[in-house]
Structures are given as structure tokens and as C-alpha cells.
Length: 234
Image (cartoon, rainbow, N blue to C red; front, side, top):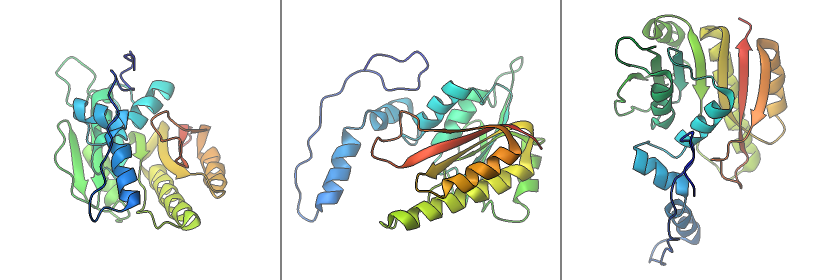
């Protein structure tokens, strides 16, 4: 692949890796392993030190909508393992040297996350009653951006998985309403399946513009998409 000037796509070319069968390995696990080994975003994430290939989804969303501006205050809900938090730190210049716009990034996840330079990550449930106040204090004010790449563990039942991830997206939206400043941006993962229309209707009441997009880094066979709400009305 040719180099992408925005830095949001893989670089170089890689030979295809074939996975040999192994005792005790199921067909589905073998397919998953082969896909991982041949995924250019997985390889690029390792090369750049990102903790997940999902980092490229946020890079591509920000390349398109430019919401991670230098100096911005950002909250990353469900931050583990930290790929989105890393991108937010880079883009808003969190912890930058004096004389530059310095952003603030705070992640929160019930699962402990290894420290990320330039960010504060809380091992806490964002459903906790005191979470909005604690995050606002760490940010030094209301958030410019609230991010959510949260997803529940897959059950194998398409409808159940859809409802679970939409429940998380709706909870993230409710949280964002408490912490965003007027004009702010909300980004959340959803799954196609019908009930995302309810969330879009709610977002249209709170944001000047609402978009439904699928970044290139999302796998083609995945039902995931992202909603972007900009211009929070407060």
C-alpha cells in the first residue's frame, strides 16, 4: 500500500501469511488467527505502537470530521486497551511542551488500563454517579469531545449483540449530555440492525449535525458503524 499522507492507513506491502492447522485449534479460531496475521491494520498498529487496530478507525474519523483539535479536552469512554486514547493524545497535543496548544485526555474503563503518556485513565465505571463530576475535574472543565468505542462481548446472536451495543451507545450519549460543552462532539460505535434509528433521533435533538459513517478500517464484513454528533446544543 502506498503511504497515506494523513497517517491513517497502513504503509508498505506484506506477504500473505498462511496458518497451518494445529491440534486443538477449531476452524473458526484458525480463520480468526489467519485474518489477524494478514490484517494490514494489525501490523501497522504494532509498528506504530498503538494498542489496537481500532486506533485507525478514530484516525480516519478525525481526518474526515476534524474534531480532535489541538488544545481540546477529550473523554474516552470504555478506553481499554487504549488505542483511541493514544490517538486522542496525539491529535489534541495532550502534554505538549510550553508554547503549544495543550489538550487534556481522560479515559475511563472498568478494566484497568496500562498507563498512557499524556493521558489520565481511571479504573472506574462511567455509570457511577460521581463519574461526570470526577472527569470534569480532571479535564479542568467541560469536554470538547466524548468518544465511545465500547462493545459488549459477542454472544453469537445477532439481535442480542445489536441490542447490547446500542444500549452502550445510548448510555454513552446520556453521559455525554452531562459533560459536553456547547459546540462539542460525540462519537460512538453502533451496529446496523434497526434500533440505531432511535439513537439517531435522540442525537438530532442534541446536536446541530448528526452523521452515520463507516471508516475504511472497519472490516467490510462487520455491521459496525459510527455516529458523529457535532455542535452540541447544551
